[in-house]
Image (cartoon, rainbow, N blue to C red; front, top):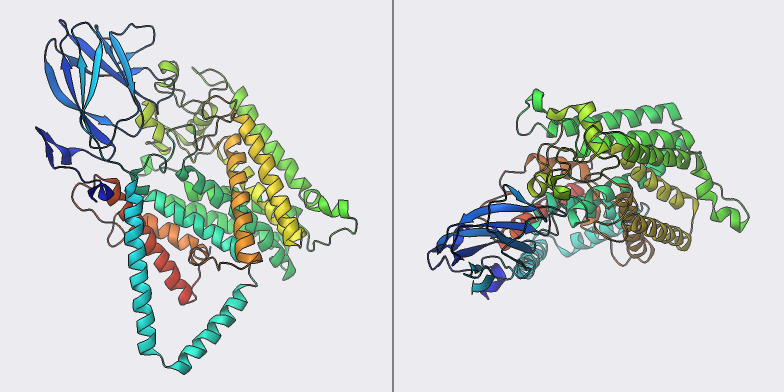
Length: 570
């Protein structure tokens, strides 16, 4: 059963296996070649990159074992001459091979034979890494069952039968009251914030959970845009309710401005958790982008909204009534998209090809090393200054790229579009009164946006006109993530609100105090009892257990706040 927790022997031959981190293995290097040679490697994660130099191999000698990353397949090339820091395709190698079967904590042998060919062998098999999910699931399920039994026993001891009956009546009344609110929206928001806390806690160190290095869509890349979108969905509901209470549009706009300012200010404060050094303070961030998108989408919808949504009598007019109501905002949305595309593909960026969408660094064989993000990176550096943008983007560690802010100013254009597409889903909710009509509209929108997004990215990771890219907040990224959000909301709406097969708990309670959970998990990021360390923390099992533990604590806090009927919103 040791494979369930990624156990490996502390030592293998002369190697300290505990010195390895997650997704690492050892490789012995041997050379039987008559002259010195040079080893270069390339990970599949680094698209169109040159091979990077690892070390020299002395003739007819073995060298110190090498630590390898096993997260992605690796390619190896051995050259007779030193190619410098990078080796390009025009250089001839003695031998080359690619391995996609490298495993965590494995030990491998790479030998350069006397005739210049390569030999690869397994000295010690690695350990499987995905069984950690099963192990953590069993542990968490056992803990939750135990807590449920303790809670049941305590209630039996603490309350008499009459009190239990009164409690059940009160619970039924509370649930009846809660059903007046569309619980699937809170469930969606709660699910988003729970996933955000989980991925921000490391997600167990799995590459497919963490943010994609540049192009692509991993689990962590989906969380932020879906949360931004559901914020947009709630804007028409909130504004309609305020107009119904007789609040004027100018006053609603002032409230929106004030709330956006508070979001921006809190985000700015959170950026200073490692020290408020003003010369290097990052100005943008997640909450700042929320504030900007909410400001524009909220004010615009307030201006364009109506006090009532009386549907036309004719069926064909009712079918497009939400589109007609949204027409003014739709014109602004299309203008924002046109502005984004015009600047992205038309702006002249010094020293960079026009329309460049890559990460710079060694991407495209290091042809454009200082062009990360193209127009987006250039605009952000002009407005914010290089010292006030994010210094450690994911592309830096894979592509040797420079600083780039994935929540920068330029990307706000399509973040506003994301929120406005959420507003349209909210308008649909108000206009179409039957659940069938709502689901048809949402699923139709999901299909259209999914096809558009797929067409823009060529239904591939790297080869489309506009790849899916969270760092750039690309147009295909917006369409694909909104399509996923529409499908998820449709499922939750049907299950939670229509059929009432599930109350949405515990995600509903999390969604009703989302701002507390987000700010709290950011501030308490390195504190007990939310986070802890045991030894080297070099297995997915331990990292996943810690991430799930932190997430469960915040879910417990949300449940406690709900039990005390404490809800906070800006």
